Length: 193
Image 1 (cartoon, helix red, strand yellow):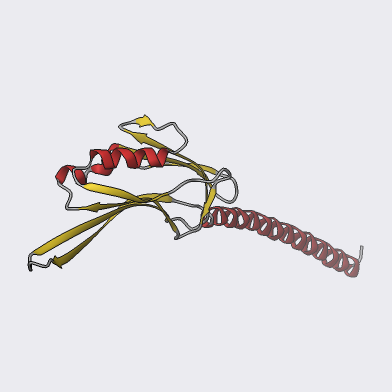
Image 2 (cartoon, helix red, strand yellow; image 1 turned 30 degrees about the vertical axis):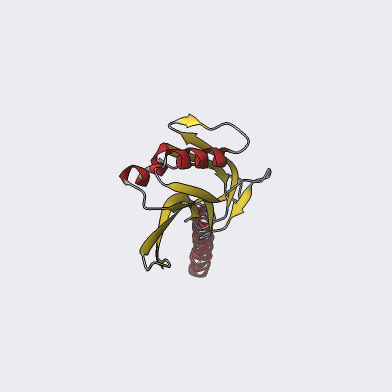
């Protein structure tokens, strides 16, 4: 073998090794890109699930009005009106589809056609001042959607007179359980206590 043939053999072997290394590096890079894409896809899916996650919460609002009346004899009378509202709010980032609302009075489930009305009756009966119901929420047969940041007034009561300390705890005797779903069909349950 001549020097030229040996040189040609070395150069062609080097080119073959270089091509094999290029193919191997390309394969490794391709595999790394595929692995990265899979991880990125999983992260995007998790982010999307969190971005449609509803989160329900309830709270009681109290609003007090004090009006002063003066009668024909110039007698001053102060009329106190207190409005108590139970509000259901969606603090999550996705829509909640409310499927069922269950109410409990003293840890016993209220099982009838109008459970909210039953709770209102108990609250008004147990209260020391006269009150009336201004609003009672009813859930339709197919459920109700509650957008992110929206709220629903479940119960709104108005009392004429100032409630005593016992009355301030009037909502402590009942609990709310709400079964709801996110838009992707994942089921959740909210318990007020």
